Image 1 (spheres, one colour):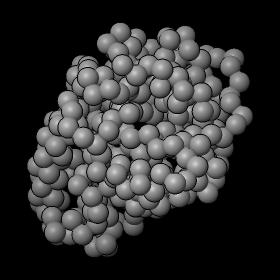
Image 2 (cartoon, one colour):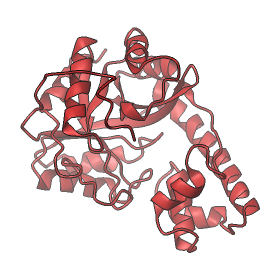
Image 3 (spheres, rainbow, N blue to C red):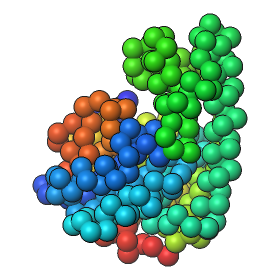
Length: 297
């Protein structure tokens, strides 16, 4: 992950110094390992004031998380993480304030999950061709929710002794360009932003330095998406050095976007990554949430 891109951005802004929110969390409704209620309780235990549950392509964990948060001193923001395309560039996008009820984006999630199922079966077939005797039944044993994907296939490979952990599975087999990698249908970024707005939500680009903009620049990509309604970019991200977080926050401010942030915690699915603190030094200001809130349609 390119975390040393000082040539791409420059900034003199200081980082926030009050731990407050975590706007990028996963539960076992997708590829995290903790149930939604446990995610909430862990956030309360470290005195976060708000969290966003942003499972991949599903809102199915939101009711449990909301129920857990109801009588606790924490706000639960319903959200979802989407994998989108912008002119051939792959982007992960977080949509916030998306309630688990019928709506333009909510209804599209079911189609996206069906696409996941087709892709999963193709990946399993490819693994079989490569000599790995994994089955869809093996994969499903590792999934608690309805958004099943490559991490669950990785878990099945780990259980079968083919690899040591999820990281090795992605590095050797399942990652982009790997021998078992299979593409899937994605929303365009513009369409995803529009559907989120129609559903009463706002969007932010997740872990933006994982994006390879090709011949363009990240800044021009941010500008393109800002002009069709993007609200923010995830500046305060666990895997980025503090100086890079600061630089990204400056870019967001320059472009009139919200500097959002979160740990991207997946429970034991990403060892050493904790809710709220990431690797121990993550700080996400509550102002990020307030700035997103005022941009709701």
